[in-house]
Image (cartoon, rainbow, N blue to C red; front, side):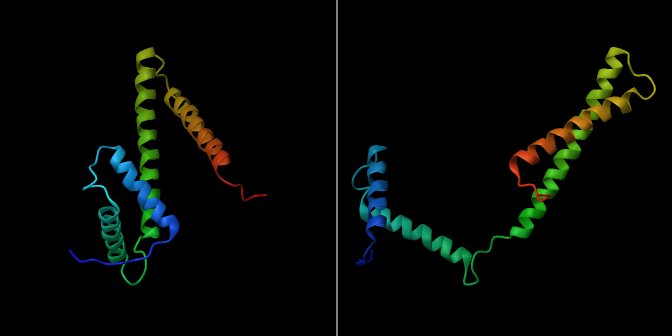
Length: 131
């Protein structure tokens, strides 16, 4: 194993020492949890991240992530509508209220409730651009 002498900023040294102390408190022996072993592991992890990112910077595909997120959210909404339709149809048949147009009225009520809940959540969690 190679020996390397390096200088650490005070804050980084404190954080490394805190990690060592936490490992010791969690039951690690002093031969397992020490400054040298902890720095070695942190450098190894840092090198993995460095190599993964390459020379062109981070390789995280934000556009692909957004596309996947929208696709999954749309699929979840569609699945919710299908389940609501099936439940409404079962409810109406069980209660004997499966008259002409009753399913459409019930689905309209359910979907309006879903849309209202989405609008309320959006107004609570996002900034309104209309102002």
